[in-house]
Image: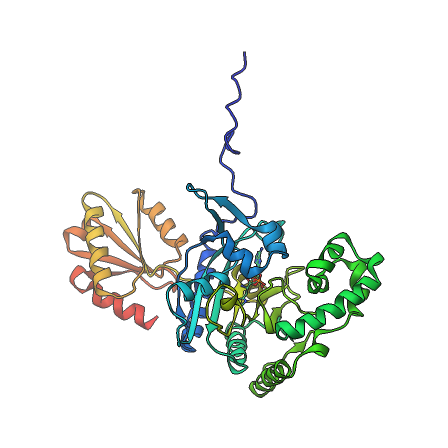
Length: 436
Ligand code: HAM
C-alpha cells in the first residue's frame, strides 16, 4: 500500500509555505532598504524629529474609532483576533492611531508639542499585487500640537528633500483641503444630493457609501463612474474661511520653497480622521499602486479618542514602493564589499588567521573581513576570495606562519603580491585601505 498522506497542518502538509502577501526581504535587497531607511532617518532627524517605537498590536477599538467604521481598512482589511482573555486586538494597519494613543497614554501631549518618527510593519488584508502587500512597511512622521500651515509645509518640504537627495524624480505632489467637520458636513449634504440624483449609475459599493460615507465615493476606481465623479461638487467650494486661509498659507509656503504641487479637489484619502490638509506623492512609474507617501492633518483625532483637542499632521511612506521607485529612477544603494579575504592553508594557520582577523578588527575601525571557512586548496580559496569582491586577499600558509609573515594580494587592481611582516600588517593595510 502507498504511504498515507501526512495530515494537513495549516498549509504545512509537505513543506512550510510563506503567507500570501507577506514577503521576506532577502539579503541583497535588505541592503537597499537599510540604505534608504538610514538616509530618510538622517533627513528627519536633521529637522528635529525624534523616534518613537510602538507595539504592532493595539486594541481593535482604537482603529475602529480612529480610521472610521465605514472605511475599507476597518470593514474588511484588519487582522483582528481575541487575546487569551477575550479582548479584541488588531495588528496595526497603520501607525497614526498608535502615535495618538501613545501620546495620550504617556502624557506626551500636555502643553507639549511633539515631532516624531516611527517605522515598521503594518498589516492589511488586501488583495496582494505589485506594490500592495498584506504585511508592508511604513516610515511615518507625525507632528502633534502644531496647527500650521507652517508645519504642514515643513513636512512636505522635508519629503521633497528626500526625493531630491536620492535622485527620485518620477514623482509629483497632489494636495487638497477637507476643511473642518462643519464645512465637511455641508459638503457631504451637497454630495448626497448630487449622487442621489444619479443613483441609478452608482455601483453597489457607492450606493452603500451614499448613506454612510459619501466622500469615499470620490475615491472609487470604477472606470464606469469616473465621469459622474468628475462632475460632482468639490470640497474646495465648501471650505470654511479659516480652512481656506490655512490652505492658501500652505500653498504660499510651498511656492516660496519651490515645491511644485497640483491641487486635486477629489483627493479624499481612505481614513476618516483627516481634516484640512491632505496630500499624496504619486508616481506613474510603478503601475497602479502609485501613492508612495501620503498624509495630512488630523486635528480632531486626539479629542475623538478622549484627549484634549490637539492639532496634528503627518505622513507615511510605503517602503516597498519607495524602494521600487528609487530603483525605477536608476538608484543603486552603495555596494559594500569586504576589504579583506583571509585564506589559511596548512597546519595551525586557521587558528592564527582568526587571531589576526580579530586584531585587525580591533585596530582598523570599520574594516570588513571575510574569513575563508571550510578549508580548501589554494586555488579554491583564491576563487572564493575573488567572488567575495574583497579588495585584498591575505594569504597565510605554513611557510609564512613560520616566518611571521603573510601574503597580501590586491584582487581588484591587479598589483603584485607582497610579503609583509605580521607586526606591520595593520599599519600597511590601514594605509592601503585609506588610500583606496
Ligand atoms: P495610507 O495612505 O493608508 O496612509 O498609507 C500610507 C502609504 O503606505 C501609502 O501611500 C503607500 O505607500 C503605503 N501602503 C499602504 N497600503 C499598502 C499596502 N497594502 N502595501 C504596500 N504599501 C502600502 C496612512 O497609513 C496614514 N497613517 C498616513 C498618515 C500619517 N497620515 C497622517 N500621518
